[in-house]
Image (tube, rainbow, N blue to C red; front, top):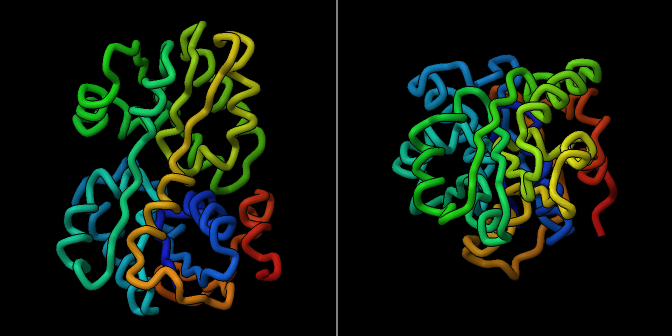
Length: 256
């Protein structure tokens, strides 16, 4: 089995690690274009064109499914990607975990990029899935880029600023950018002092990984646990900054 993931940069690591946990034998293709990130400030047409480039490069490797492991690309490019690649290649998008957060009860905060925060797409998800939960949208300028480059000072500053805008008593924080899942523990530590007694963080990686496996035509076919990395379609290695995150290290460990 081979599954491809695409993102602007290393935000795809969380979903890739979740896939490796569920299926240690899965062959993974990680397709990104880090030189073009961040995608958030770009126009929808620009995001769509960049996403198509990453998706086409991944599709050339013959995967059984493609995960769009990027909230921004899912907002702007998912329909175009599916129109081009399906039904031959199942395409799985990434949606913020608003519904399960609301189901837990208590106030919800959604951390996302400035482009996603306040967007009609996110507001629509809140209307459709938040029910009666009190929801606060928290923009996190610069956080994804800081995580991409593992700029510790910038990560700390961006998390602190977003935590300060997160209301006291928040019960759940939805991580509305795949990059944020790589620093989930640091986000929890920053928000927890002012949060409700039991703070829950909800990302999308595990749900997306499970959905990708469900969409594979033959889930019994085993892979070799290989890892292929593409940057703008060219063979590459995981960036040095990525290796500072446990998710990347889990991908480079020998397959079971």
